[in-house]
Image 1 (cartoon, one colour):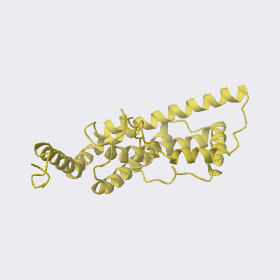
Image 2 (cartoon, one colour; image 1 turned 90 degrees about the vertical axis):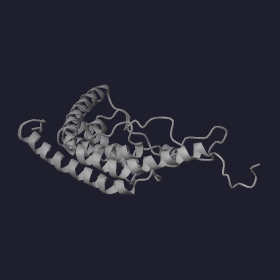
Image 3 (tube, rainbow, N blue to C red; image 1 turned 60 degrees about the vertical axis):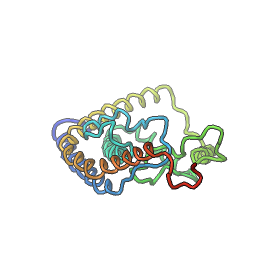
Image 4 (cartoon, rainbow, N blue to C red; image 1 turned 60 degrees about the horizontal axis):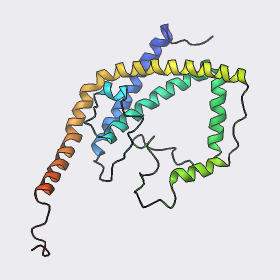
Length: 230
């Protein structure tokens, strides 16, 4: 017997999600006062986790909010969705669960796993900065991770019947993930006011200070006290 997303089970899921989302927002609010604007060169490619995210839209974090602020919340919410899907998969999708277990065992066999154990604010971001034209890296963290994974044996091949069954279970997992994602977005709507209040208190003053400093630099590009000036 499977736990289909409906009835009493769905009600229990919704209550659990409400608690988890509230805790995730609380953790993000506790972290936000420590946020500082990045001073390094920005990335060219947008973050695939945050760009156009319905989670961020539900939270009221628009494009005018710095990515670091967005990423800290979107990652925490993604963890909730991933956890719910993992539970659903373990209960209802044995073939997909077996495949995931094999992949997890393969990952544990790697000697170098730099993307694991990161704080939510850094999880899912590229391991290396964007390269500077004309200045190639001697080595990269991502490259070393790939070298460590290259020596791990590949998973055994699946029959065509197993592939078809696996695709069906993956589809069910995706449907469940979408359902949980919609529930999470609905719950986040109830936290928008305190999320936006925190952005106003802790983020906007820092952005305004940066803009003011930039304006001063543009108005006076040279130091009048520089002895080298004519």
